[in-house]
Image (cartoon, rainbow, N blue to C red; front, side):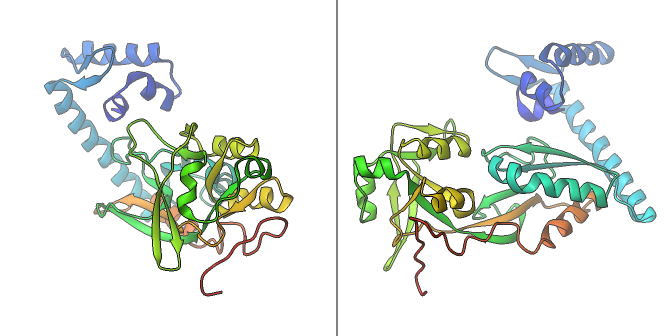
Length: 303
């Protein structure tokens, strides 16, 4: 099933802590047992055969039945049980969610948490994820989105870079700077949306570096590589220490929402329901960055 969802045997194997050879062997054993080819494999892609699609759909029904059974038992016994698949951005997962998962497991010891960290927007259905924690503004109404907190962001760069390249005074001057961009294969042109007194200004963010992992962008900025857009809480200490300096403080980026996203379903399993409640009860997930001090400052309209 995971190979079909991820369209790649090697990726599916890694997600299940198997070697690609072991995963391929298991698929071959399954095909031999049922007497039909389930997957067509090429060097670039993997596609289920007609028989494979039928098998996959029935397998999904079996897993859903198991999930319903687990949820029923949990409801009757008063204790959630089963595996919960969670995805989150890398920085948030490392710094904030990791310790919370330990607390969650102490409260619900029969819930096994499979945490997948990625700055890529994972397809929850394709990759069989139960719930995602994202820093974004919801656009897909096919999922339930529950807001946890607003997440303000900042443009920043090292003082060394700004001494060499100059300090932009208005958004249009960013075109003359090296913008450090979070980008994935196939992603469109990145535009930074900045708040101006007359409304939002969308500025193309271009430069010599891009990466699919946010912490790399921070390291590039610290080493004088260019200007980066980051959540305040991720770079607050660097700004307080003077290693990074706020850029265009009068034109802060639009904030995004820290939210939970999960698919619509008739029955929300107990393991998912208690995780949603656990995250919602946290008084403040993001560190307090109401002021920076040091060489950086934050200007908010209306304050």
